[in-house]
Image 1: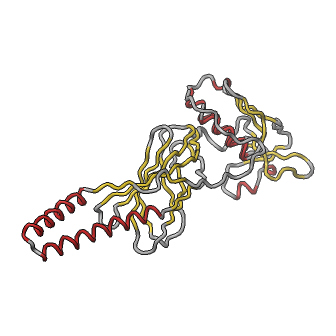
Image 2: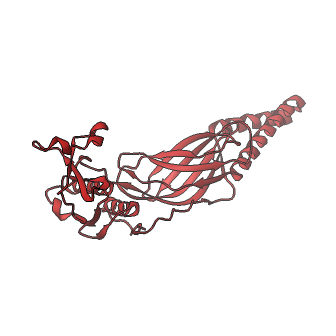
Length: 313
């Protein structure tokens, strides 16, 4: 059982969207380190300067000063790029285990011109880090979808983001860190077939027909042909028949104890499937776990509440 901090869960009526997170720069100036090419460049330039002074060679001195000016231009350009960089991290949507997490990051550069290669390193609260490379022009707009692949279900938090570049000449590597606070969930992988529910009865979207409650169920041998649901048959679905007598309970409880024959992970996967099925059918359902119970309800917020609790179990 995973031990995590108490998550901030949706309540049954919580429908407000999360606000966009704007990371704050952890450092005002980027950290500058010379690359291997930059070290070689500095050594060659130093040799030229020493030679020009010792032999009073003005031609070599001009070449050395020109190379120094390129070095200065390279450094100043890269510093200005990173100092003027702005990033906005939008909400990260939950995914099921095995799917890629998409981190929407909008990067703004206060310059125009050729595309600039940027390396983005994202760190999670569990110690994992992911490195992605993007190429962005100064006048380019839009959101970069950075992909993460967490290996476990549960609650994750993106806690820092580091932007680095060797633009324009590759002589220096500049890094600037941003403090990020963005939470997302990786749900347990759903298990089972989505075409059937625990009772084998599926509620019709048409609600009521001819004043009576109409439900759809799988066709059984001996059912009258006139009760076949023609619309679902035309859509290529399984053969369903109208059942005027089927009764679906008002509230459905999804219980951990009812799946004692399964190991923990398959049990969580099956409960995840049952949550998705109940939500798809419009059923009121509750979740009963050894450590927590969620009262029956319906809606998108209730579904994510249950899936988050199962992911962190």
